[in-house]
Length: 542
Image 1 (cartoon, rainbow, N blue to C red):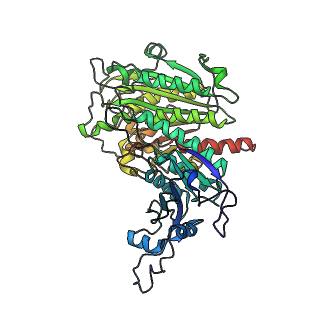
Image 2 (cartoon, rainbow, N blue to C red):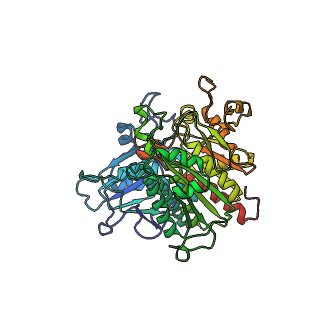
Image 3 (tube, rainbow, N blue to C red):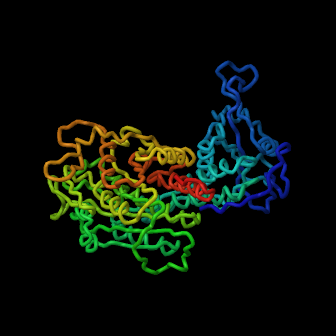
């Protein structure tokens, strides 16, 4: 990621630096790009004298923008009007220095910040990152004078917008993010928070974007071990032999058709642990308490015998996005030094077709002894989660249990590509997650757990069915999946996040880059930070 540093704030009246050179750097400072902010002006103000009622509003300058225009000798209002720029979030206007002004940085960017909400600032940050690929040094006053959370949002957007998925082959690599970003008036804490969230999202994206011929369950376990050793996390792994011996029937059934056997991985952050103290050491199983996160990790989902249609296949390398998010968040917990334990359980399997594949009609015994009649082998995610949730609720004694899963097309169909579906069994937790979604910029929409739909999970041959009967036409697929998972958490306070919709984007969109989004990483970090603040204040953490 780009190296970010702070400079003295500009004077709020004159736009001149309180110390140093501010937005008037000397040539020897190596600044390639200056970036200043503009916002939409009043809609009633005409773009120029004599313009009609429908004229575009004149963008309003923010700190340093007027002084930069004077140095570059430009009429920003005219240039913006000609370019169709109003100052809304994500717009940008590039200005080059006039002839004979070789002492000025090669580009001046007027960056639209819209209403300067956190979401608008994230979009502005992402826009700046994409407009400056390949440069050495940017200097900006966009967040000068703004509060900590606003600065954090802008920097998060910058880091996230500059992400590019790893690529292999002989073609030339894309230009990297800018090497350095200098920010006038930077709050150092905003940078720390933004870097933590962005690193987590980058890790989740990297793992999720990895091709499925590489990202097998064993490979994901290896990556988890490497993260654990680097961050001082406890690490425990169940291989297929141990999974079978200990009764993880859901994982074993889903992974039965693949030559890449399933895995279950536990990574645990405990307050006060260090990388030096735990690196390379096998941990002992035991009560974890605190917050337990469970991630669906289907490294490729063919649908099994209930084969998916061709057009649905390419994105199925991303069906392990939940496990990638969980791993990245536990790493972030260690980085943040939270005052409570955070455990991640990664339920890893490849849902392939083979001679030993599980079948519709099979009855599978899950970890807690509940038997499940299989109606569709493409509803595999809830089977691996059933094992992991039951184990977590019984063996890890969580205060809060959260699962993250690309679980149902129904959630994506109902909510689209921007919102994840939120379910839970505690109103206070649901409210806490909605607040975290709002503050992190990863929005959620609460859906109900409808007890009247329980009859759809009835089975004549097992304790439960895991999908509705053929021909039921009941709808509510995301709700039914959540109701099934609820059977495995008992009385434990529980949240279910169905991230099937926002797990990927088809093109660069705001702070998301094409491919995996890492959706959920920033959300969970925001939830954990808020919980930590309440814990340290001596309040009810929930």
